[in-house]
Image (cartoon, rainbow, N blue to C red; front, side):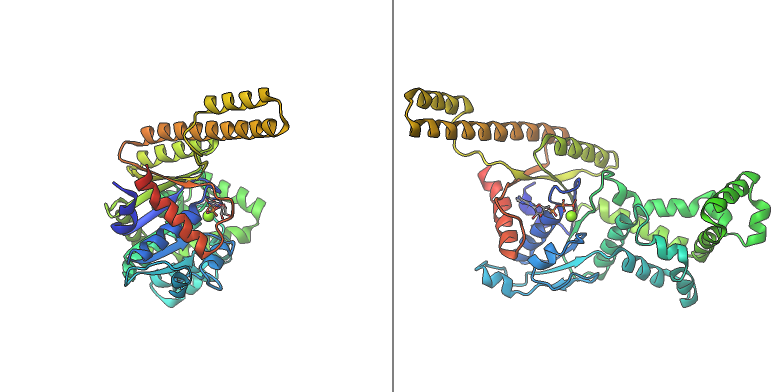
Length: 379
Ligand SMILES: Nc1ncnc2c1ncn2[C@@H]1O[C@H](COP(=O)(O)OP(=O)(O)OP(=O)(O)O)[C@@H](O)[C@H]1O
Ligand SMILES: [Mg+2]
């Protein structure tokens, strides 16, 4: 596979990786490149900073896709294949959850009961895994509506690579849970059936958090009654999208040793879940600066130092710096090859160099795209 295929042929591309490696940047660049090549692309980002909205010339990214102004392309003199367009949206966990409830509730009353529930209001935006779950819900929604032929999903910074893969199933498992079933029962029946252990547990918890909280939680779960099947079906559909051959996983990493270890951990977890990484994008790679070996450069520095003149000594220091850079670049590439070998031979390895500036505007996003897609011919 070539990296071009990600943006030319795939329908869904999921960018994952640990915090700060450049997932949001990469997701935007891939969608941008897809659009430039004529696809109807949408990037679903999770970037509370306004950086990406600013870069795309959009006042504010909302929970619904906003199309970027085609003038942004012409301003930088980029050729766009006719038909190509780019939209962007920022995942708003709470609104997505609200919409999900409204759409799946059997009646407006049921939706209202859930949406007004204090427990729901407190947790719907903050519960661990909710963001991942809602990212998958949004993917499901966009996939279903069919307005885009390329959807690139940015993922939240998480150490738990599988949170977003697993999130829909986790909710289904919760709905199947015994304690949950007990909580769903009408109050008196529930008290009769609930074991002494469960009752003791609830009493203890209510002493700590207050009995209103427990009542809210019970009411929250009870309000979901009848919606389980809908959730289960959606979890199954998301599972199908994720395993579809038209979906690709891109693992973003930096060439630093700690980031590489995290990336290895990610790749292993993905493999365990039956997902393979189609592309490893290494961001912030040091360029190689010429062909001379570090040893050759250091020898040149020594010769210059022996010459003794002031300019020669200064030049020697520069040669030493260059040798350091080359050593770093070589080490980075060795680490990368090791990671690629571990992930599997078919994984496309692509690089984005360390830029001297932030990726903060449309021109820079485009520049990163050119650098990324150039690496195929260069390496
Ligand atoms: N190749 C690069 N050269 C220079 N700066 C870069 C490069 N790639 C990304 N950056 C900058 O690094 C910062 C982090 O990038 P980004 O937000 O894409 O990372 P992230 O993985 O999405 O982070 P988080 O895990 O917090 O969501 C941004 O300010 C971005 O402009
Ligand atoms: Mg991000």
